Length: 311
View 1: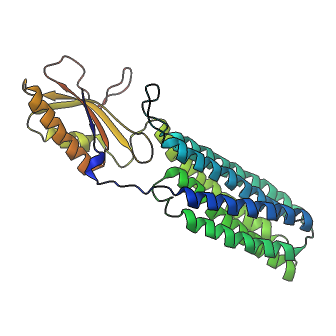
View 2: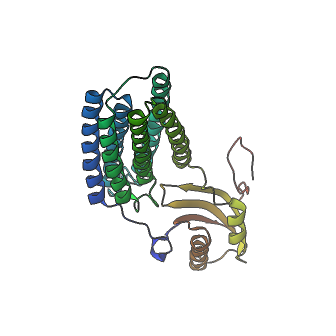
View 3: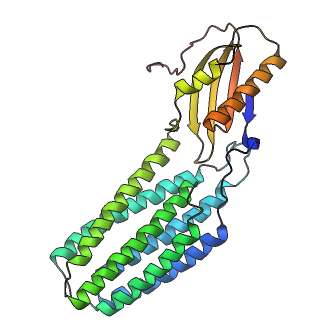
């Protein structure tokens, strides 16, 4: 069994998550949450309290993101051969689920508030909404780079971005209440934002669940991979193929390779190394495990699972 790690090829460098930026973002959000809870109670604004709840969920999400970032970099061991690399994926799924829950909560509260509007201190709402916009936007800028190729940070980034929009909705509601007495605007905007939150969180939940279920990455097609491998003149067949993502950065592939001739082990090793390079070059597969075979009597289906359809 040949095991190859392709990390040294340098085609897929990934941005390292900044712990300092994450910590600063957490501090900013703790401050926003505390200010909005006090402001919501004093002003009697449900919108502010809802925004505070939203921000509190972000504090939790960011703490989980920070924890997952630390844990996922732990070394592998005899008992944990992959280490904790999926900690970030589990955390991202949790964050996305919380985001969906908050979206549903905001819709329920928004509908209730729409039918039962209350008079509130709009000045406090306006000032704290502006504070929320400024601090949340600063948070977005702090973790924007980290969110590009890290699912867990993407979840936290979506939390921050949704907070900016929620604070904007609260600000508009506050201004509408102050100058026009239009109490219905705030819940309408809140419901619209909540629907967006649910949509984005479900998208992230689908992606993280696909990784945990070891589905093949969407951009990879097994027939194309087979075609690249069969271009090697020494190869007869590729079968028992499995492709999965360990996390949002590492793609693994394992398969059996039939050779046309009974080649020397040194030749087989050289050919497998070439196949590995081709797979990394064409498909970005970072870890390849190929089992070399000659005239072995086994199932030759490209995808084979007992009791399932074969490709």
